[in-house]
Structure formats: C-alpha cells, structure tokens
Amino acid sequence: MTRQGAVTVTAPFDSTSFVVRRADGSVARDPYNVFASPPSTLLRAAVRARLEADGRFGRVVPQSSSASADVQVEVLVRDLSLDCTAPERRTSRAAVSIDVLRADRGARTVILSGDGDGMGDVKDGNYSAAFSQAFDAALVGALRNLKEQPPVKPLETIPKKKGENK
Image (cartoon, rainbow, N blue to C red):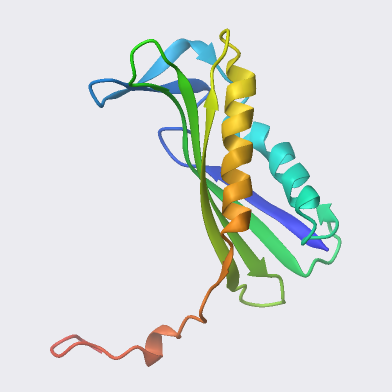
C-alpha cells in the first residue's frame, strides 16, 4: 500500500492565477484566467489516479488516512505555466519531481526519485484540457524516470574541510 504525500507547487506557480511566460522572457499573472482552486489542491486527485494506474504502487491512500503504508509518494511541481513565447501559439507547461520515501517508523528516507516535463496544446481556449495534458505527461515522465537514490551519510560522517569548525 502507498500513502500519497504532499503535492507542493513552487512559487510563482502556486497561485490560482495562471502564470504566463511572455516572449520577452518575463512572467506575469493573468487576472482573467484562473484555476478554480489552488493548484496543489486540484492536482491531488490527478496524482492519486496516475499512481494507481502506474501499477507499481498498489492501493494508494490519501495523506490523511490512518492505514499503514509501505511507501509514501511526494510530488513537487516546479512549473505550471502558460507559454506565450511563440507568436500565435499558447502551450501549457508542467514540470514535476517525484520522491518515493520508505514509510518505516522513524526517519523516512528517499528510495526513488524522478523528474518529468510535459506540454499541452491550448486548442480553442480549453486551458483545462491543456493543463491536464501537460501535468499528466510530466507525471508519466517522472514515474518512468524513477531511479534508486544512494543512502545519505549522516552529517557527522562527512569529513570537514581544513579550517572548518567542528
């Protein structure tokens, strides 16, 4: 069994207003096109559905469940924007990182990590479909790219540089 952990959306993409990438390289918020709720709230159901569809995670329970789970999956959304850098074309973009943590008692350790990127084509102003397409593609990519993580040495075992205080 798997526990779905936090879905965190980094700034500036953590707002209900769309983040728009402009041709001059700047970003702006679109006051007229907004998500119905904060993206971190909206994306939870999509993450859970994709994890269950993946097949490697078994039953996926929400973060609030008291059920015992073998692993916990956390998702970091690094990009969720509307790309308007090309003339006459709008594309949704998403980038995610996934961490799979061992859910033992005590310190939880990251055992697998993966990154993915996705794009969606905005057709007829259907932003919902375009963002869903981009986010799902990014999740699929991150799951495909999951790799084992080497164990982290405790801080006290890392040698200090000459002249550093102990």
